[in-house]
Image 1 (spheres, rainbow, N blue to C red):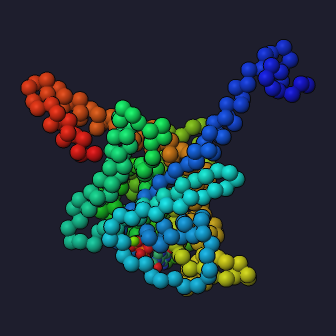
Image 2: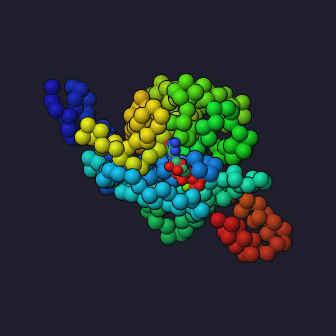
Image 3: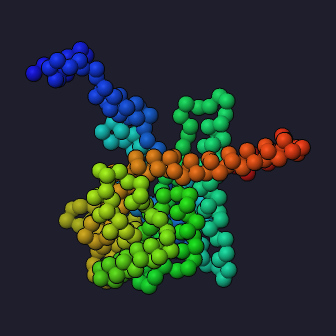
Length: 327
Ligand SMILES: Nc1nc2c(ncn2[C@@H]2O[C@H](COP(=O)(O)OP(=O)(O)OP(=O)(O)O)[C@@H](O)[C@H]2O)c(=O)[nH]1
Ligand SMILES: [Mg+2]
């Protein structure tokens, strides 16, 4: 059989057009540009969010010397860390935004506001760029593609504060729930707690990623397995331990060393696989197609409403400015 190529068809008598090379063209274009993936970590105070950020960077990007590390200070402001990874010619710009923990006050009303504002500000920034007359071909993307939400390992149920925060977040961002400090629960406690949390999420109609209603048929079996594992029970640590000549990230517990990247010890590696290996493209795509689109529609329809008022004799330019400044 003749080799496929311009003018040569793999099927006799059929003209070969070459649309099968589109995939390769798209791949090469994406490789040149690289990928940007933005993660946000959110949750109540002291659950190990900053440790998780550092663990993910260490386990994914840097393999440094073993030894104990300085304890982390409590996070007081939103902080973004970025790192560029390259593997097999594919470049990834991984950005993780760490947020201060909440829930310490007697009155925790509106404690989610800074987080919601942060997520929306990134959409606003993108929209502003997109609407410019001379806009960039590739707008720098700071939109949050995934929010990792930390649940305290209480062994009971989801607290009312977590429910309130999650109900606000799931409308604007892809949310992946995790049980923090999983090493403080036995394997049986973890399984029971996870089941309880899944039931709580469903009772409160909180939608977590991956959503069944948006998946392709091809993804369905894999996503089903992920949903059965949610919330991921994770352990974070930035301390390297030398075991049989191998450097491992881990945390000492009553039962011995809990290895961060060992799938039989906790779900950290399952989660990293989902975020970076199997679902990154879908997380980026669904952020653009659903969450950003919802924001854009809402923001632009507010503008249209203000223009209707203008026609009714209001101050046009001033109202436009007000809308812009909200971004
Ligand atoms: N047992 C256990 N402890 C952890 C784990 N991850 C972090 N810690 C410890 O929990 C404490 C708080 O960790 P941080 O990473 O600062 O927590 P945080 O959520 O960023 O805290 P805030 O910024 O104050 O909200 C530290 O003493 C960590 O060593 C874990 O997986 N298991
Ligand atoms: Mg912190």
